[in-house]
Image (cartoon, rainbow, N blue to C red; front, side, top):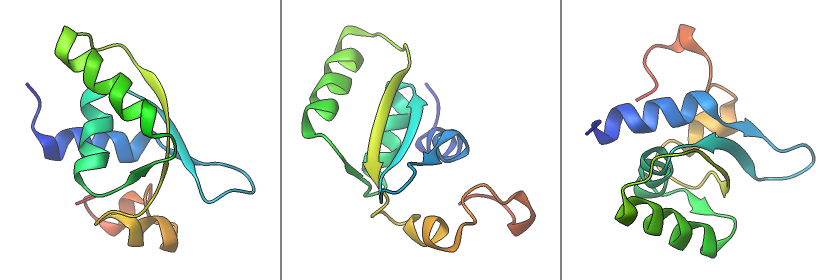
Length: 92
């Protein structure tokens, strides 16, 4: 199993802002989604989290579109626009 840190790093590399919205979106694996939620980011739709948890319980790892609000520990990276900026050093 991947470490939570690597799942979060991969998730942050895959997400994009939604035009004209405070939401962000990414096509992520269940482990990456759970890493974002564990970091404190809030899902846009609560039922998405239930769906992802059921996928993990079944051992499935396919990707799922996940919409969320950046409210977690890494939220300042979203506000500054440095979530994808590799020149700023490691994501975490």
